[in-house]
Image (cartoon, rainbow, N blue to C red; front, side):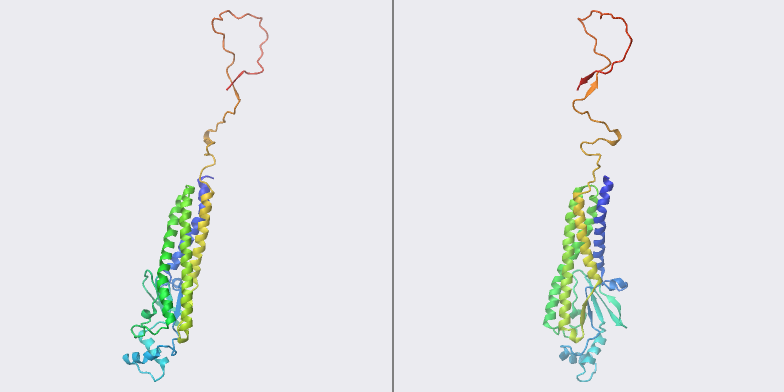
Length: 326
């Protein structure tokens, strides 16, 4: 097998690493482009404002806002007032919140049409006070305290979540580069395994953080302001992508670890007791013999006498050949 077997051994973890990196990229580009349907459907949480109605706790300030805007409504018709304010500021029907930004749009015949997406931003967090123009209306303190607290937690945790995703992406990309060295040695697999473990830990942490954080924020929004016409919901595709990235990253780390223990790249013919396959020679076993010649050495002086002559008999070959001990 040799190097070919080594390459086959690391193909599986390498492909798993590529899959994890693709999933992380999908998470990062979600809700950053309004031109692709698949990207518009990638969001952690969605705020639906279609049913914004008159039950809002900010109704005491609405009349002042309407006076400033010179909008006339009947007394007590807070529903019409909020509708007019919404039209004046052109507040969209929904907002999709992603990792680096958000997308907004309107709903027609139960179909979501994204009209605009914000520019990608590091450590992004969705601030409804700014996005919904509450500060412009002088209503920045109108949100319930529980919602404010949840938004403060979301603001702080979103920074850690962004850092975790960045580290996970960088570690996974580095894992791909180091995976090439794993073809040639087990040491390369060991180093790659360490990076793969780090990539898995940060990917899992980022996935768990995003899931838990947006579940809490969405739950608080629905508990506190859903009666006023603002409903929150969690996405599906982006969570599938982030948890698939976690699963692929874990599997890759396991297979990298296996490749560091098995599938050596050394040829089976190059071990320390082997020889070159092109010129294989047999080693001498102990206590073997080899021929020393066709006859014994001639006697040397002072034995100069001629050997005795005997009648010539029939010639015959010897039944054995003398050997000497080596």
